[in-house]
Length: 259
Image (cartoon, rainbow, N blue to C red):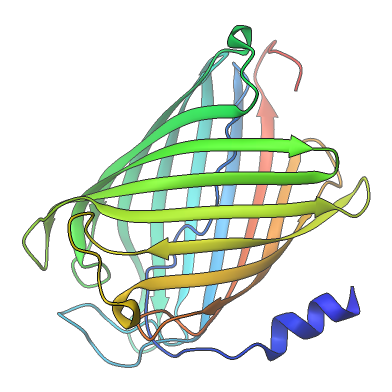
C-alpha cells in the first residue's frame, strides 16, 4: 500500500487541460430493475491549463461537481441523467449542462464469456466550459472478472454536432480499467482515459488527451459505491494532476433481481 501511494504522488505530470466532469470507466452490468443510483462525481484539477483556449475557460484549480441519477427500467436496460456544475476561480459556481444516457446490456440468458453492454450519452454544455456544446458518445462496454482480477474496456466514440470547431469524423476515446481485490472490502487499480482524435486522422501525440488514474474502490456496503484516486496527464494537452471521487448510493423502490 505504501509503494502504491508513493508511486501515485511522485510520477511526473503535464500541465494542460481536459474536461473532467465525469471520470469513470463503466462496468457492463446495468442497474437492477426498480433500483436507482444517486452519484456525485467530484473532481479537482490541481494542475491544469491557465489560459482561455478557443473561448473555453481554463481548468486550473477548477472543481467539477456532477450529479448522476441512474434508474433500472428493465432487467437489462437503464436510463441515466447528468447535471454538470463547475467552479472556476474568479468565475464562481455555474450550471453548465445536462446529458441523458440510456444503456442496454446483453441478457444473462446469452451466457456470454464476458459482460457486454452499450451506452449512448447525448446532451448540451456551455460554450464557456466545453469546446463541444452539443455532443453524443457511443460507449461499448466489455468487462471480465478472473478470480480477484477485474478488467474493463470502453472503446468510446465521440460525435460533435455543434461546437467551437466544425464537426468531423467521430473521435476515438478508449478507456480501460484493471483492478485487483486486495480484500473483501477494497480493490486497487488503474484507469486509463484517452481521446486520440478523429478516427480518420488521429491527433499528434502531444495534442491527444491521455491520463492514468490510480484508484481505490471500497465495498463497505452493497448499497454504496466509492471510487477515488489521483490522475496524471501523459501528454501536453492533458491536465497534469486531477483528484477524483465518485460517491454513490443505491435506493430500492420495489422488488428487483438480486445483485
